[in-house]
Length: 162
Image (cartoon, rainbow, N blue to C red; front, side, top):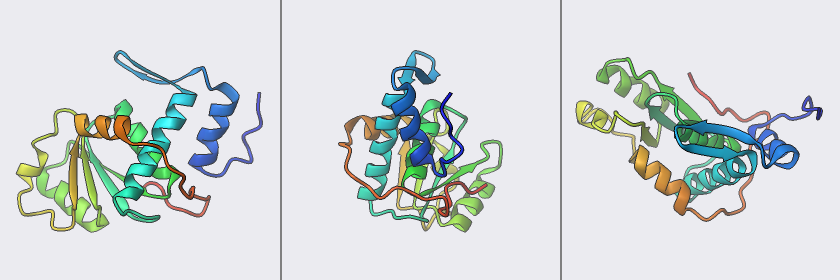
């Protein structure tokens, strides 16, 4: 087994497992299966897409939804670029969602399946959010973004805010 004790960032971790076990299953949901090589590629595309939208290390993105393959793809991709994921509890009330999203200054709000109408319940409460992206739109974003070089996060960069 490979020594992973020297891996200090999500970028290092994902690249390591791509190199060690690229053809093995890393993640699956329903009929979607991703190898470590595919996960590395998809998360690099997420990093590219977020940076192309003007986000930089330390900026926040938020997620309202349940755990899913697209959530983890977004989280790992953001983490690779030092962009902070803010998962918002889907069981909270819409005013609580809005408070958390505003408090973290999230610039993009991603919505999981079944939460597409969430922004309507927070009408006028999200002045800082620049973009709202639904599950199908997030999947299309990953599929249609060409990978570009990016500066990876380091062990000193925040990647998750709970």
